[in-house]
Amino acid sequence: MTEMTFLSFSKSILLFLAIHLGRNMKFMRKMLAYIGRIHPSKGLDVLVKSLPLIAREAEDFMVIIAGGGPEAYMRSLLGLAKKLRVEDRVRILATFARTKRYPF
Image 1 (cartoon, rainbow, N blue to C red):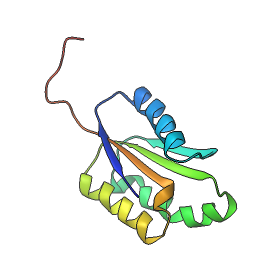
Image 2: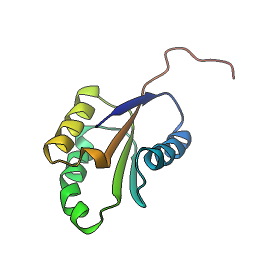
Image 3: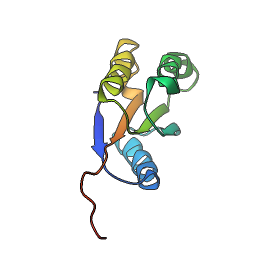
Image 4: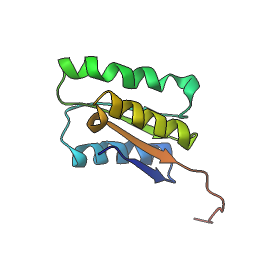
């Protein structure tokens, strides 16, 4: 099942979580993590479109996309992954802006 998780953490914590979640969801030895703004201008659809080709060469390959951006675009990436039958190889960890700052 393809899923998107919303978090409010720094990018370094997101990287740790991406690796941890990737290992716990399904053991994958080869992993590519993108951390940054999730936006159509970044070409993440090209990355998702390349997964069927990569999957033929590396069975245990996974992509984790972490960052903030339009939810509609994130959902379109997940839809593309499902259409290409690589939804089990894609995880999106989405951040959102904090509306209130805390003193810690």
